[in-house]
Amino acid sequence: MPSPRFPIPQGTLDMLILQILSLEPAHGYGIAQRLEQISRSVVQVNQGSLYPALHRLQQKGWLRAGWKQSETGREAKFYSLTPAGRRQLAVEKDSWARLSSAVNLIFEEGSQ
Image (cartoon, rainbow, N blue to C red; front, side, top):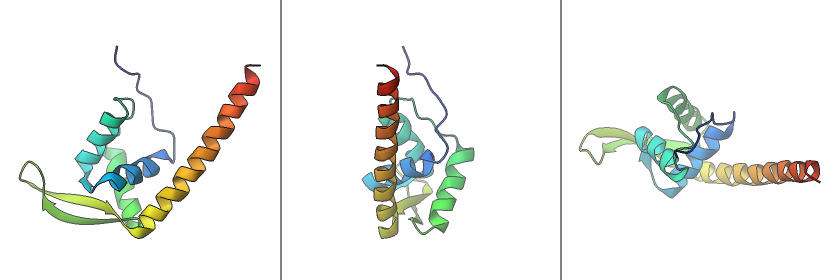
């Protein structure tokens, strides 16, 4: 049975993009594929959300972009993390861990 899909919570996409790019530089389509692959198809992002997010992250100085040849032989814009992007990812991961921990506490309290 396929995994259920659901919308990515607001504000989460940027963190997920930063995480994917911490693994290796990638083009937009590759980022979307990797998100889907790692999440076992639960997380799927459309181009209408992905490319504005990539642009926004680049404007903040967290990503850099450059054209190079993709695995298909075509030119593609590849994105990579800047040092500021790596620092921001650490902040985002810490915030996410604290939030998810608090939510779990609330769930546990409600089940007692």
